[in-house]
Image 1 (tube, one colour):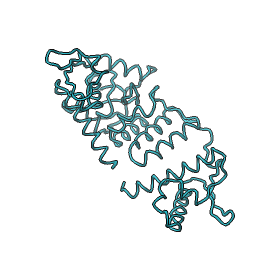
Image 2 (tube, helix red, strand yellow):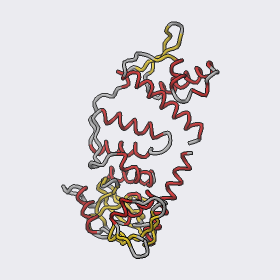
Image 3 (cartoon, one colour):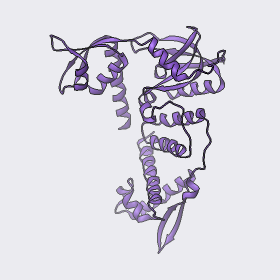
Image 4 (cartoon, helix red, strand yellow):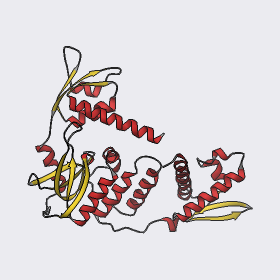
Length: 324
């Protein structure tokens, strides 16, 4: 999305929020002059009143075309606008948990840039109508780390395969330093667990139930109808069992530079050379922790956690540049 498109999108979001706030606080209408003076995005038009009014009229028309029921009228010779609340509210919804999950995940994809406001406000509007997403107890925002790091194409392919009950093949990389392997699965569903998003199903290569972290999956391809059904077992339990069975643990050695990272230091043992040792911790937790407090925590070992930390930091820097 170009910078001009982002600016226009943000202005439209701001304008919509102004109408919603006015409606909820009992204001029956907003004048064009008030909107130009108070809504962010029109301030650069000060001193150019007619240009600002033209931009406002164009924005109102675009919102009307998008389905926002704004009524324009004249009062005491001045232009006024009002939101028709009754036409904007959604009727009560009756979505299945699976349908609500798809809509919620679709909203989560738009977690950066100007589209996020529309995506999230759309989900909140659906939720207000009674929709509930079947992603455990993890709130939507907690999944943003996984959603931001995964390909929308992967999610689209997984949701399509799940809906059509298909068998899939995919590439999987357990860690950034691990080799990429091709796997096969009868997909049963998507599950959120501890702020992470997993796909769950029957692993044909291992001959057992398995869960895979979705952001480590790529090149998903449907290969035919699935041959294994999930039965009545809760998919969340399958994820927990898989994590418990295959829970990798590593010893992490780090230095403290700059501000002390008290929460991490409290869990570590200080070494004679001034470094700190964390014994038998989850490698992904260690990488995220080090990236979150960088540069105050500097990893010394193991190499795979250092590589994952660097990958997280590079991803964060890339996201920051895209939003500038």
